[in-house]
Image (cartoon, rainbow, N blue to C red):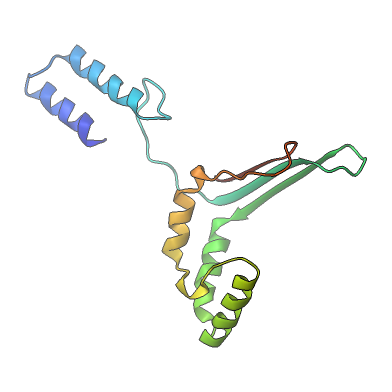
Length: 143
């Protein structure tokens, strides 16, 4: 329950507003929150377990004309991989970072921490992948 809902219920308990007024105020709060259907209480999101990458594309090979990619990666595997980076010797990390930078991937493996992965997963709903091909569509999300 958010702070505004709690204040409405406190005003109701103190007799400052009626039950009807409290219902209208709470419904108005729910309408302001995107993605919350009217009449439903907002629930915390379940912790996602998988990273999903789905792509549909025109393949141009003359076959059925469609290519489908559907990858489901357990987030525990990603978390374990991030923890394994702590075992890489510093000299190797320097070389790997240099090669990644040359390839156009500016990631510093020495700075990669498990909490960073959790932050990334939390914000994956905002990921939009633009493809140059108008006949292709890609989705990246957690489930």
